[in-house]
Picture 1: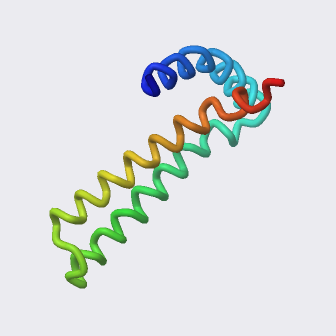
Picture 2: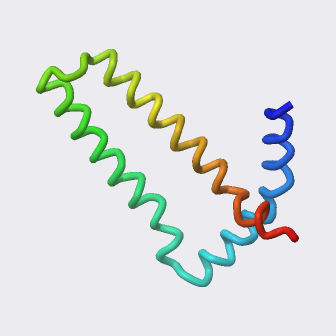
Length: 92
């Protein structure tokens, strides 16, 4: 049941989010490049962290890969939640 609610929420709020995002991009060109800069910084930082964890033998290669996979999925989940947050909680 919860998965169905998530799909319905995404289907319902996606058009509003895209419209809002395009307005924001047109109002501020920096906003359109910010996700890519953040993605680059995250990739570089997580790569350095993974190398350090392996070099100091804190985690094995397998565990570093598992950790990266978990963090990647959590980030995606958080982004999905923030995707419709403004619309869901602004309703009276």
